[in-house]
Length: 279
Image (cartoon, rainbow, N blue to C red; front, top):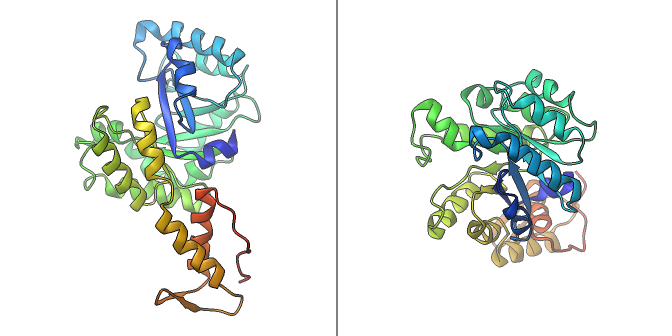
């Protein structure tokens, strides 16, 4: 599960009170799915959603993440008690401190990995220690909740660029995979999903949260290296040597550029026939 989440491009939310959609989501082409017990479920359906997730986790044979209700809610403890019986990852909403994550972790199985959702001002300001917590496998950015807290339109990428960059930098500093960008709420607008994905990829994100299966293919394509990028990486790696800087396509190439080429090949799933040069 850790490897799956670290490499995921698309991660699809499914409401926890819609068990009829669980198998469909797992077959949607998304790299991972999140069974949501939090925002997608009304208060009067929380118990039924938890029971449905409990049953499905007991029978499913696929990697899955479950988003729990926040620590400030009356459903939080019951969510954790149920998940302590299963092998799955847990998404922590409004992650904001190491103490917050430690409190949750001590109530789960020792091998349970966390996906931290950074969606509050406190979470953004504590992004590095939160991402560096020992159980965290991936970070995600929550644009909708953060926008609401700040009084900012979550679709205003310029206004939230500082927060997005903070999540990207914190993930890199903690040696995590590039984080997941927040959702695009325009469910039927594939061009908007594509534009948001392209912008996120340029900002350093490695994938995106999805709220509808029709978004998955677009997100996967946008976070998979293009043939041009792969061809460039091949040229760099085949030209690289252990003897310092050299030139490819008229540009200087040294170890950081070679490392970038290696990351592109890893993300593409293609094999390379050389190792990264020694420092």
